[in-house]
Length: 267
Image (cartoon, rainbow, N blue to C red):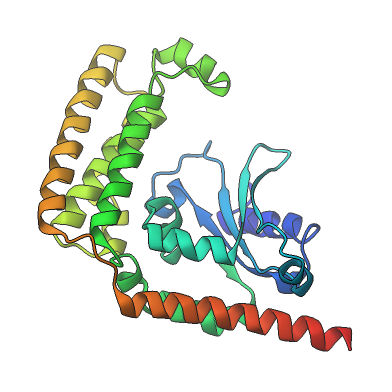
């Protein structure tokens, strides 16, 4: 069986059949492996950050933003760096987590700039705590409503359990995450479920009956909403101007490097 890192490399190798190597900033794992909640059946899903070519910019082409589904059903989100930097500003947990993953392959020509983001990742993930809480609440509500939704890919799971245990485990994980975030723990620490890890894995594997799962989901949703309202009262809806400037500068320097390298090779 391939290691997680080998599977991430496979995702990169496949992306290289679609993009020039210098267009790729890096590829980063997202999901259960980052929290220690993976099982032997877990997929490897990744996020690929790409830089537009000079022609893409000159012709005002739409930035890349798509999900590539591999033959084995694993997913890679391909996203233009201009759009990805915006997700940092939106404070979406699903995008911010790549700043903490151990499973990443960064293009050496962009490593200096990427390291600037890593060095400031706690500031970036607290760019706007009010917005962070909004994002976490949104994810929790999405998982709550998805728990019994009849998605075509989930029909067999729903027949077996009456609900999707994976969605319930996501909901409980976000509750734990939000609680610790508000308590002042570092973003990186919040990503690690710690003592909750075993319980979350058991929830994911279908530990609870439908009635128990519904009761847990209702209680968890109510707690998330309660915590969010409290957080809105203590966090101003305000962006950090220093982080804003950093994100702008890193985006500029990466795109400048890419265009200069492309044009020098065309000479």
